Image 1: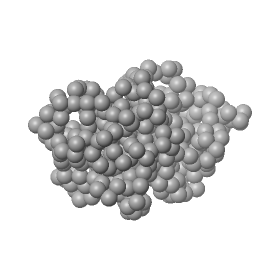
Image 2: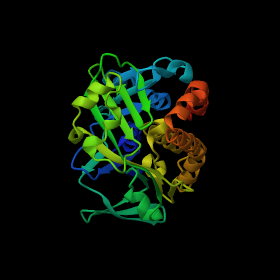
Image 3: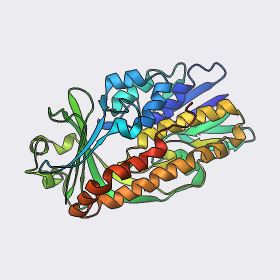
Image 4: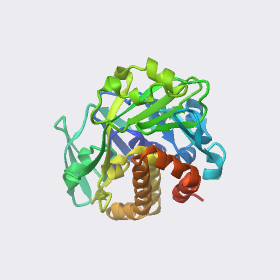
Length: 369
């Protein structure tokens, strides 16, 4: 079986990794960049994603490269505790979650893809199904034939556009920023600071560094150099971070949600990760759902090698779970847009109950014995 993977992100590399020891499978991965390039940001891998990595034999490497997160804490910007959750209780296992630099997780995955053929600076120009095969024309003018094409090329997926056209995206925020800082001595957990103007999240990514994610509710009207102004005179360590940060060192992006698509692919072309179900990070499930997608697709092909029914079977296995995450995501989005005094009261009264209920269906991963 010859498989083309379009996109060398987390989901695409996970598929390549899972097939590294299969002598009857040839994997060809193409990446539009000129090398393994990732943003200098943090990535929070929740327990379900870590379980997939553990089954792949990469759990210890990821924990060593990242930072084990066993607690979530929410403060107001004066430093008063609003909510505290033990993640081991929430996920029913020890050391459940890890925060890691995106490039470090990428490196762990990329270093373990066996004999997969990798080409950089390459994209697809056309994807045409022909009976039991897919004919792909590449941006360099060459053609090749595959049994299966997997679009793992992210939120702006060209593979998805080739098959489905332009799928609408819902714009949630024009800009948010992410950046890496020296790890504050006081931060040892997933730590969120809230006020009426925005959210400031800090999570350690290793023993020396932490990742920050900042959302200014006035994001469409403020210059980048003033983006962190709502957190001036906040409690420490936020105030010190605001005083010393440089907007040019941050990674800036919009927040968007892909409209639900009825099926994660078409014919012999399947979509995984953000290409199938991109959504903002309120539930922190982007990486974990992408890892799960790779895990599920691998197992479906192990159970039944009929590629003609793969997309249908894959969609049936994933849609309910993805739709649940999207629903919870949207609920959290609504909560984040409420006045601070309303959301803080809600978090105090029912935050632990709600978060536990939201993650409960995700505790056990697909095909987990």
